[in-house]
Length: 180
Ligand SMILES: [Fe+2]
Image (cartoon, rainbow, N blue to C red; front, side):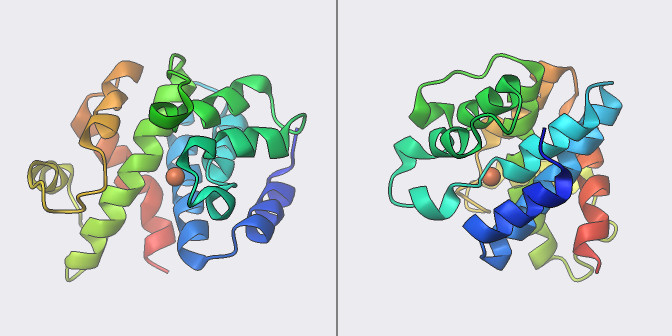
């Protein structure tokens, strides 16, 4: 298994854009928090979050390859179930349907980071004091962060977390990263 520091170095090498790194770190934090809440393997789930967009720069114009390319790059470096979750996070394009807890956690978790980051940008206090209820309202506003899939966020219910609990957990997990 990859060490976390090696994984981060690999990410910086393949995906140097600051926004992409931030999204990956936020996804890692949310996936770790989800693993703790659900008694799953925290290191593994964190790595899946951190590395799920490793091929982002390479596949920007080739969405079919997004996820699959990462699985190719990492090959033996990550457990097969982590690679499968990375491929299924882009299941709409890769054709690999999500099925495991981790698959749904990664899809819902990494998508929620987009909603929360967008909401933090339009709040005077940023992420500080953000509530699940206000995020839920933003989810109903189709024009707000329109590229963020509401359906994917709702996949949190497939891992047994009601939407509000999930959003609260994600806000808490991201807060240290967004208050620096
Ligand atoms: Fe992502």
